[in-house]
Image 1: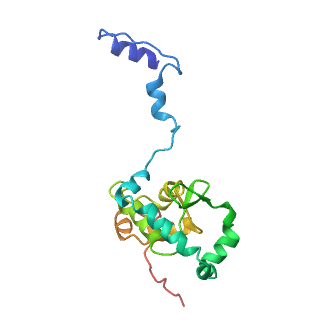
Image 2: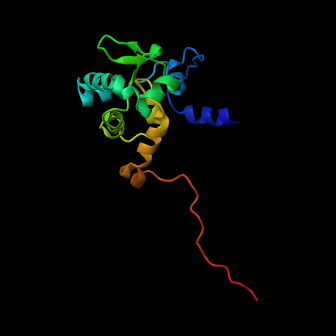
Image 3: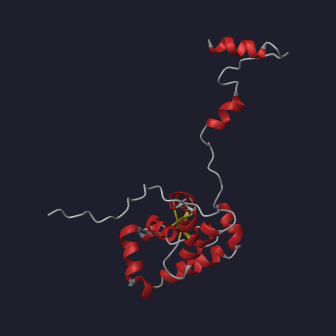
Length: 180
């Protein structure tokens, strides 16, 4: 039934309709398929912060690995429980990494700076906490990273003003009458 109406409609035009099998129809399928390669969203982060980011990471790592700072709760517990020192591998620029992700220590405002640039830069345009975490975890690692990112995004004034809540609005608060 549906085909007949299309035939009647298209009979007025001089055109050829050709069917391509699923594998041959690459254009239509390419729009629906998941990406094979990960997009390089956060790579733009390095552009905005400049080339001194690895230098800042290296300074924070060397400060964290000093003997007097290893006794601090933040660094000492992290290196014993979450991350043994043996798993940290040095890169060519001297920074330590874990599974090809830069380890960002708690010294300095490095974590805050990375979150700020990846959330508010002109290349990222205020992503949500999940998307921001997925992008940052490809390049960086620190303990409680997901919780820190969620807290940072929840405190963003622009996001709280612009992005709508996905909750049903609560009803009006009306005091029920007490019957005697």
